[in-house]
Length: 369
Image (cartoon, rainbow, N blue to C red):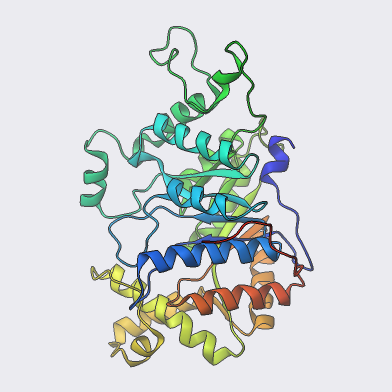
């Protein structure tokens, strides 16, 4: 399998494009982080069984309702409980980390799950400014330094620093250097690098470098079409891709009826309202969300947020997702459901798989603990 094959998905069933899953490892009121992580295993195994293409987790910090602060750790756990679905970061926030550390972590993941690992990278901190400072321990690096950090990471992944460079004798292990020492045999795979974005900066950079691009439609919907157009206009063929490949993350939840879908997605909308107003917490229960005394301004925010979450009956969600593909030209959809409980997320994914006629295959022979 070459680099292009490892990036491009194949649509299953009657889906117009490949379908994937973005997991925020949300923690609901009355639940623990451990329960949320066990739900992630269940979700990944369900996605694998039903023919979804990939399962990504996102890096967030200092948010009580999101237990995905360490994507590499979670991905290693998911790799041990799945057997064929692609796993990746959606994404690692590169300015928070030394590029060598990221190369080592994802080289290790590639050794654990050969040919199944994606490395999605973002330039935002995934948190507030104070937490970003605590993570980075320096004010010298940030989003504006992203291209330099990316270039350094790519060279570590490829063991490609030129002679005379200060890092020429430093090697990310596991990695390509293992094929150059006596008796060394190197894996034929290297984690494909994706750039993530919610505006135009990473769209242009991904295009100029010939890398796949993932756009956060689920929280930046009004910028989706302009960003994808910029990516395609900026695209230059590379050893990685001969044509653009754009994935978009989209909030989506199917339920047996529209009222239940609305009841569930309101929990995520209230959680986002609290986050945006400086009151981050656990994802509320449907009962708590239904009883919340929204002000007029809060109701306006909530309704605007829910307008970009595709929710309703399975047929209605399918129709909405198909329309989104037609409008954006996305090559792949990555679905996320920021709701309270495990049951709604798992059932919603199953219903959507049925709506698209995805295969009801048997799980790979690994057991969730």
